[in-house]
Image (cartoon, rainbow, N blue to C red; front, side, top):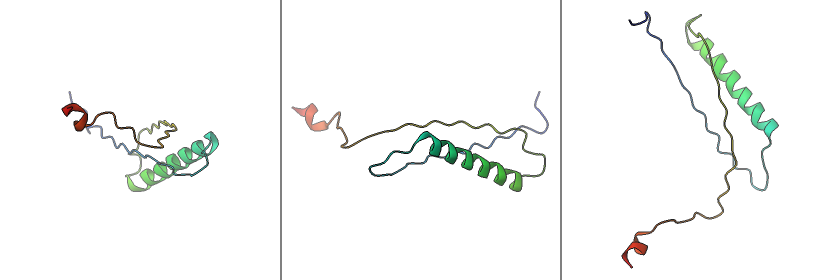
Amino acid sequence: MAQDPAPKHLTITLDFDLQTPNSTVGEARIRAAYNAAGDAALEAATKEFPEGSVKTITAEMHWSYRWMEKREVRFSRDDAQS
């Protein structure tokens, strides 16, 4: 049986591509940025949606470092023809 009203979900994905030459971004700054983004999203949601409509908010963080000096070509059509 359907719920009345039907549950609605809003998912927002933020992907920060950090370009910091000759430097790394440490966990403290990453966690601070994550918390600030979450706080801003919560503030915006409670401001924009009707009072009492936000039931729960969940958050998830993944972060990694990726280095790519030169793109590695793994397959080329020219290789397949020889």
